[in-house]
Amino acid sequence: MKPLYEITNSILKLLTSISEQLGQVNAIHMDRPSPELRKRNRVKTIHASLEIEGNTLSEEQITAILENKRVLGPKKDVQEVVNAIEVYDMLPKLNPNSMKSFLKAHKMLMKGLVKRPGELRKKSVGIVKGSKVAHIAPPHANLPYLMKELFEYLKKGDDPILIRSSVVHYEIEFIHPFSDGNGRMGRLWQTLILMKEYPVFEYLPFETIIKQRQEQYYRVLEISDKQGKSTVFIEFILQAIDESLSELLKVTNRNFTAMERIEYFLNLHSTADFSRKDYMDVFKDISSSTASRDLRTAVEQNLIEKKGDRRLTRYRRL
Image (cartoon, rainbow, N blue to C red; front, top):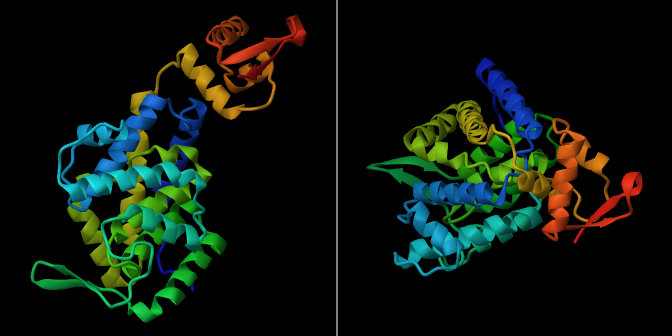
């Protein structure tokens, strides 16, 4: 059964804005950002997602853990970061449409934090806010059926992937399939779903916007529960994505250096031989002399090798 939601004018406007910004991201070759920006945004993503759950480590401490440096902090918090780094590194190998991948991701994310990571909960749970019960999750006996239905919707739904991923995020929060870690799994899985369609989402820290509006995040979850549909949650998440893309474009709307162009191109052509024309087909705004200089630099840096001469010149990654 398809989860309930409505398409509002706000959702339509956000879908249009996000699509336009994704086009700009691709146009300036930021769908695969530089290693430094990639690393910085990965740290922001992990920091925001875990801070929502009460983790106390700073971005600097998370960066240090990422660089295999020793960090002083609560053991649980350090373990959460180590786990998150492992899972985010594994994202390209996970299948967003697979329940097996979903359970594997939870097992990695919650390793050493709960008794049986990677297993659906075996008892009923409720979420308490202050002195009142904010949400009663479906009975544990219903979980296999509910999760099967959710993954069927994800695989076979015909609505835009931006909406489908937001619905899945909400439904993971609502169904509450695990004893703990449901919030971070909802955010992680939306990232995974989107990055398979748009590579930039692997490095887009929209969780930072969610963290900045944490109270609103929980409020739209609660409103969606009461209304029995995820419309307001979809609007909230799409707004966070839209703003994150705007921030990314502000930071990266600049001319690439030769080495950044080379790195980007080699990520696209990791094995095949290529010509200067192939290089210029990717970077349509550079001259033939600039392309030649770029490729000469790559040869000098031992990143590629050159074969042939003049029009017969071919290059291959080393």
